[in-house]
Length: 122
Image 1 (cartoon, rainbow, N blue to C red):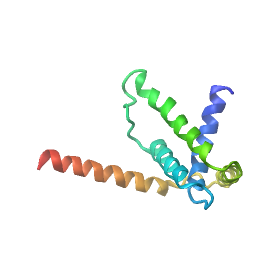
Image 2: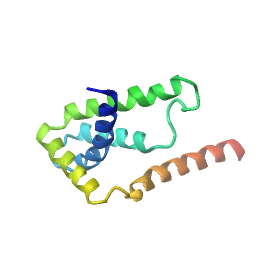
Image 3: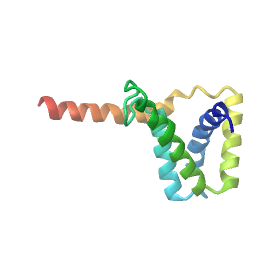
Image 4: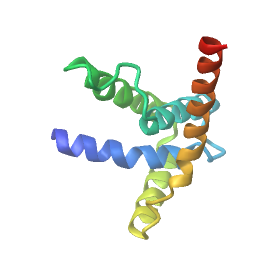
C-alpha cells in the first residue's frame, strides 16, 4: 500500500474509531484504546514536539498508526466496517465539521495547564 493511501486510510479510520466506541459489541479494552488514539490524533500536544527535527514527527508516524492497528485487532471486523461506512457517509453528507468533538480534548488540556500553572506559580 502506498504511503498516501495509508495516510488517507488512517484519516478515515479515526472518525470510524469514534463511532466504534459507541457500539455495544466493541470490547471495553478496544474502547479505551480507540479513545486514546482519537484523543492523541486530535490533541495539539504530542509526546515529542513536532518542532524537534526528524524525531518530532516519529511519534505521529509510529505511535498513532500502532494505536489504531492494535485497536482494530480488538474490534470485530463487521462492527468496524459498519462504523467505517457510517464515517464515510457522514463525511460525504458534509458532517465533517463537528468541531465540538474537540471540546473535551481542549478542556482536558486547559485543566492540565491550569494545574501545572498553579503548581509552578503558587
